[in-house]
Image (cartoon, rainbow, N blue to C red; front, side, top):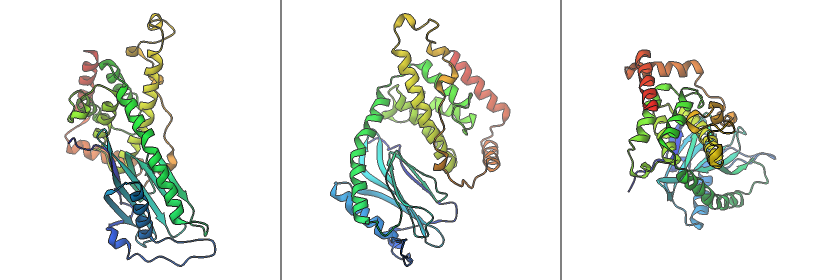
Length: 326
């Protein structure tokens, strides 16, 4: 079986601690008020798992973390639903101190962090802790939405697999991502890694020359980043590749006799702004404790550890340019 390349990530680096599901039962739930209804963390997990079982969905792996005072809970669940080397996952979070709503997020790339970063492909549940909240009903409706959301996600991946790329198109997309900074916040020395992962794939599932294989080359390279920055880069990657896919689609729909005219630019000379994108919602990454200065320092240390100094970085870029020109 091919290795699953996607799934869930839970990061606790802002004071939260990871605990087991059994330990969730030991967390004290505060007394409610007339307007606020605290919910035991373990009860959410149990109700969610029960609702999933009615849809023949099983949790094959789960992980949880709680804040120091036990008021906030963060978790991820990997499900027994696999496709194309991916596994569907659920991210969940809850708070009993009025700091955030009860929420679920779902997708084949799910990221949950105690700095409030919370990302998936779609969110089937977002509910305040009011007296009107009926947990079983809310979770049941959310699981129905999760089940219905599987097919659109599969169709999205299928479309990426159908988007066959030429070698020149791939090189241009990689070039614009790093050298033109179209994916903000990723270091240039990851560029040769993306190139090699695509043109020398490590997994049999990524041998086909298509946008899905290229996407996984990027995300595999991003694993070298610290978790929060990996999440940010992956979120921006999705928007960037979507726009690149649309640009290529529009070009290929043009009549052949217009391909080289002033009405269309050949892919090898496509304007860099044609691969632009709008940033993902910055609210997804609230209160990031890693400042830009700390981020730069991290990469300086990483570069030193890997013996990648400025001269070597430039040498890598020159080598990549030679490959593009070849």
